[in-house]
Length: 183
Figure 1 (cartoon, rainbow, N blue to C red):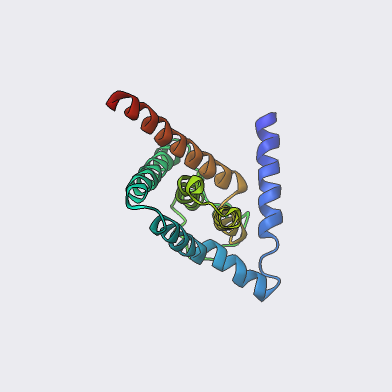
Figure 2: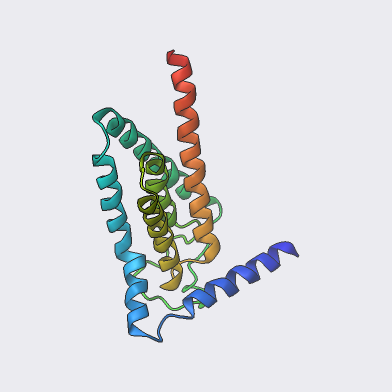
């Protein structure tokens, strides 16, 4: 019973976000930017933050970001095979507002996972709260944009973010334990 209620809530929330699409050109443009372009802006922002670090911190940070990205993407692919879910536009729940192969998995969202996997490792190194907030908001904007354009359910986004958090946590755990073994 709980699973059915959760699925119904997921569908309703997805339709509420996607239901805003197609009414105002400016909002559709913003949705497209969030879903398609913002990930590239986010990559640039993270690269800028990495570049501002000392050479030693830069090396460590690039390794942490790279490992987090690889783990998150790999986990997403395994989960996608084990728990394949069609995209909402395939089921007729939403209208497809960007070009997307209907055969690709919806769950979990690769965009949401990769956006968060980019942002999480850099946050402890960024001093300015406003810049940290912008990075987090941008990662969440990518995720919401994917629902807006009809290619993901809300739970796809949440699952992708959880995968990214777990991946980053795993990388941090490994770093801590490898330092103990080296010492």
